[in-house]
Image 1 (cartoon, helix red, strand yellow):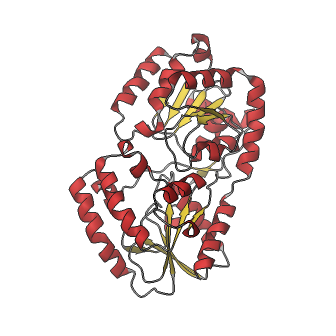
Image 2 (cartoon, rainbow, N blue to C red):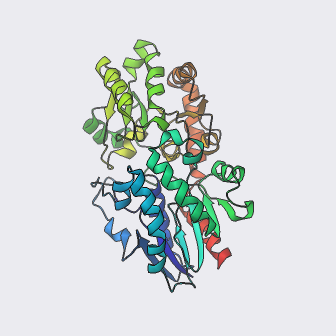
Image 3 (cartoon, rainbow, N blue to C red):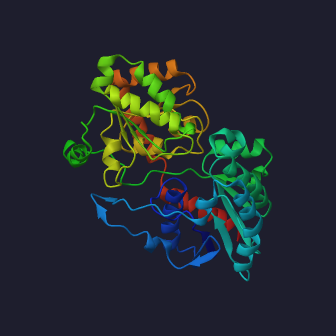
Length: 387
């Protein structure tokens, strides 16, 4: 089988779609079913993006590397620029892909360019349709223009959850037989840690294992960090002081008001904001938390939920979108728009040791059901159907 894999998301630091593409690409390169694997990124053939991502490793996790922004990133905030980009690039990319009719083209990042062979697209979520208020208008414009055209030339769609598959069906974007849900997974570095394993990270980050709650993700309105902070503020003061909230994530779109809330809570002494976590410490940061608090408003999959469960950390998350599906009965679910409900859930999860033990066991079992090997094998099965 001759496969061309879109690799525009393979750039450091790997988060979300980049992580998915990376884990998939590694396994496709080793698969006996793939006779030839080539990479195509932003209109260019790429020799070996996996090798380019090779990083020094410490304690089983890659050391952080600086972010590299693409042309699409730089243009993404300009509505005129994204319209021009969406109008011109399909023809250019399609021309550079000519002569490959016998191959299969897979875009792990939504958009399939014009291609004479069979095509596969991975759709991670439909937030631009369901919640356009969570994005800059230019990004919404681009996805509305580019995704419809992409789906028209796509033979098979992969969604990262059954929830997104059902959303696509509800919007009439593709027939049911042409959409396959294939869930993501946590990397093997996310696992329970002994007390000794936690010491280096806890010392480096200034934290005490088992005595903090954790949120990991970009600080932006969709992640609901403002309501999480408001709910945490309502907890008994003694509980807040004994188990502060750690928010780990970079600054996202439209987050100025959220950062003001973060600064106020940090000044009060019960919140710690870390805008950047070196990847070498991230597995221990998960494993050392008493609770993962992830009351996001909308997700396509919600990878931090699975990473926390694989680390043996209890999870509180939302009762909406894909999050109940991903948690699989192992997490405490709250209404993400109800601050009082989030607060009640936080107090229960932080105080009830019996629930914590049960959540750890159920979370580890749920995370074990999801693997990148399974994700790759089910993806290859999609290719084989088309071939």
